[in-house]
Image 1 (cartoon, helix red, strand yellow):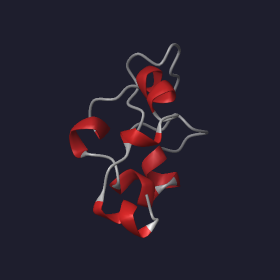
Image 2 (image 1 turned 90 degrees about the horizontal axis):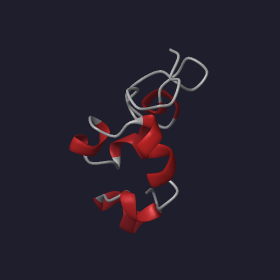
Image 3 (image 1 turned 90 degrees about the vertical axis):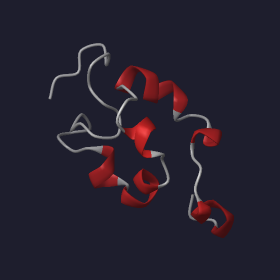
Image 4 (image 1 turned 135 degrees about the horizontal axis):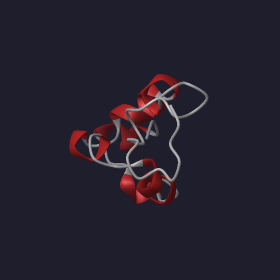
Length: 66
């Protein structure tokens, strides 16, 4: 998938990382992201937002998984 400027490719769902999605590459991390965010965050938005750990919330976080 060509992402050009990242405004239409979904960060968590689309295959923009060497032909794979973040879901395929980091399934545990993927499940730590709220579903609404996974289905709306673009690559352009996600590349900045994912630098912040506060974007991730999960019951797993208190166990050191997320």
